[in-house]
Image (cartoon, rainbow, N blue to C red; front, side, top):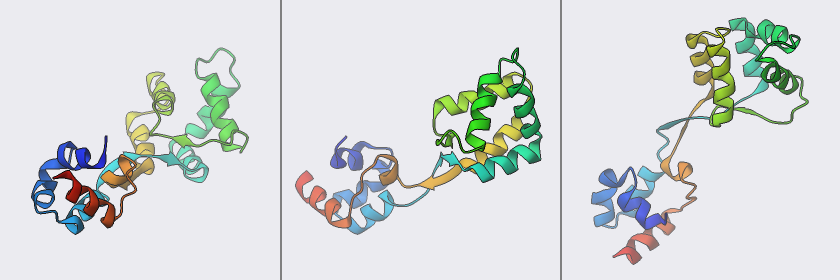
Length: 150
């Protein structure tokens, strides 16, 4: 989606409409760059280890990693690899695969919903609409688009 379409039809279009109509690039820029959209992102290892210790998940991860019959063994081994610095990846709750891995522990009755939600809270961050749609716009970019859009 091009920037003009984002400004006129995106989720902020109603709020932006008076500023787009008057070509108020400063107000349009401010709204597009306001960090008020809640998303989930990566959890760093230190935060995860603290959460796992507080919730009892650290022991459960170890137990399931050693149990060849456990349906959670692969997930547990991957989490241990990550915790021990061998995976080189992040546990990123914006990724559906990571959400499903976490949900697997809930489905197996090894993690409570409140404890799962506590990890999601750790992963929360606020982003702007410009960040969300990856429009690294300047006020001048918006001014140019508004002047060309009409």
